Length: 472
View 1 (cartoon, rainbow, N blue to C red):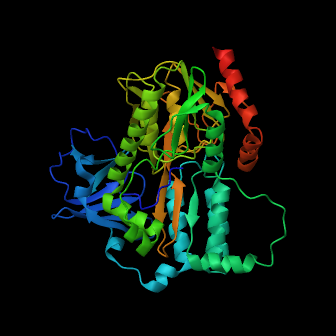
View 2: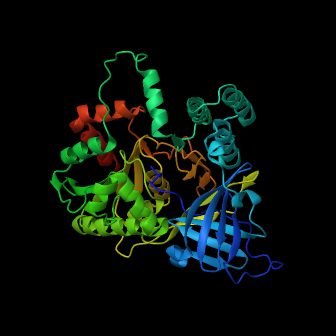
View 3: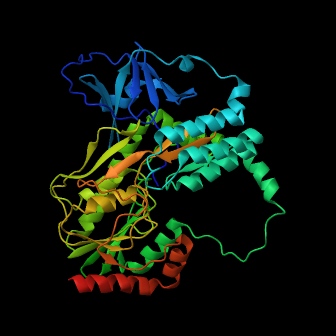
């Protein structure tokens, strides 16, 4: 799960910044165009900035703030403005002017117009979705069909339906959208009365099943100060670390009064915006490092360690790399990233797995399932570079691309996959997932998998132990 509450702050990659014919930039002041991601960054002389989301038909303010929030993560290199956000390096090149649409305010009628909002949505998809070819999507045909539908019946409900159909058609594992409360109320009213009685069982959450598994599988639990990462002894000589998510390791210091006034989600969002995304991600990485230091101090004398990511839906890539670095004794390039740009892709940047001077280099057994998603898959993919790691279970979800988050003029949020995450050899695991070395045939369906584990806890533990004994 890589989608985190809050707006994504300024991104993109760029053309080669080492051209000898280009002037070396000496000031950040001015207008900068991202390469990919469809952003414009306009920096004023007082160091305040405005970030714009741009499409072929619109230019919308995404954020107003001050570049001080980026610290040394925003810097000039020759003719290129670079921004480091977590594990990702985004680049901008100077633009001579700010598009005319960026200086114009939308009237309320236009901002709420379903047809205009669809055009903004469709333009964003067309210019930024990375996997049309991989998923055999005929975008022009899909756009034509939906344009006819929204034109024939221009309403929020129709807009909702065509956006829903779009995400189903393009098969985007990170694709999502959230409409207004009023739309969900209308949909609920429509669906009441159309519902058929079912005997469906209540859904089980990933944190819920993970907690039960950890409690059963740990013969000696050593966890402290961490509800997200649990550790201890699996059986004699074998340690066990279960990681529920690749975020939630930092305390943002949200006051109880703020939560009482705004509600938890709004209070989190406000605090997040004040901190800035770059600082937030770094705090999460530091939090993971703090917890892993405790865990590895307890498990350092084990003969081997099981790292269970089967119920981990994702979070932050940098947190995943921090986790895996505790089993890595030398820096390694584990992936190349780029984003879709025009008819191709942007220049790539390297993703490096840092080394840890106290790295545990004895055998690591990494457990994955089809519920291992997003940033957790980055951990699985990075593990392919480590000689002491064996991946066991089923291939991961296949949702490695970072989610590009956008907002429509009417206030609805949506996200799409626009990033290429490749191994050093150029292999992409989007859709198919990161492969395993040894298969344990877990069910593909989420609820079926969770129930199969909960109904057979001891069998689950023994199946893992059986594979490990075979490898010893």
